[in-house]
Length: 95
Image 1 (cartoon, rainbow, N blue to C red):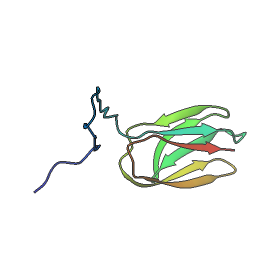
Image 2 (spheres, rainbow, N blue to C red; image 1 turned 45 degrees about the vertical axis):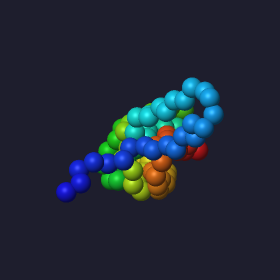
Image 3 (tube, rainbow, N blue to C red; image 1 turned 180 degrees about the vertical axis):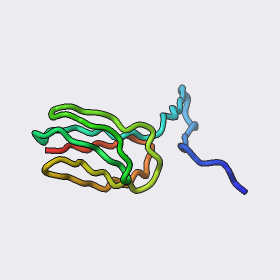
Image 4 (spheres, rainbow, N blue to C red; image 1 turned 90 degrees about the horizontal axis):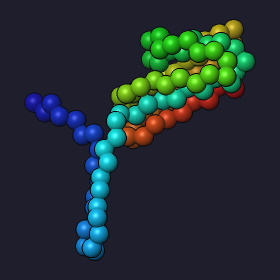
C-alpha cells in the first residue's frame, strides 16, 4: 500500500554553469475577498469555515488537491467551485 503523496516536482536542466534552487511551498490556500456589501458566512464543501464582514478578506489554509464547492451565505448568496490541482494559492472575490 502506497502511503506517500507527491507534493511537488520540478525538472531542472543543469547543463550550464550556475546555481540552482527548488522551493517547495506549503499546500494551496484560498483567499476569500468580500466586496458584496453584506456580512457573509463562508462554507467549503458544506463545512463552516468562517464569517467575513464586508470589505474584509480571510484565508482558507492548507486546502487539499480536489474540487471544492465554496458558498457565501447571506440574504444574497454566492457559490463557486474551485478545482485545486496545483501547488499555488487561489482567490475568490465576491462582489
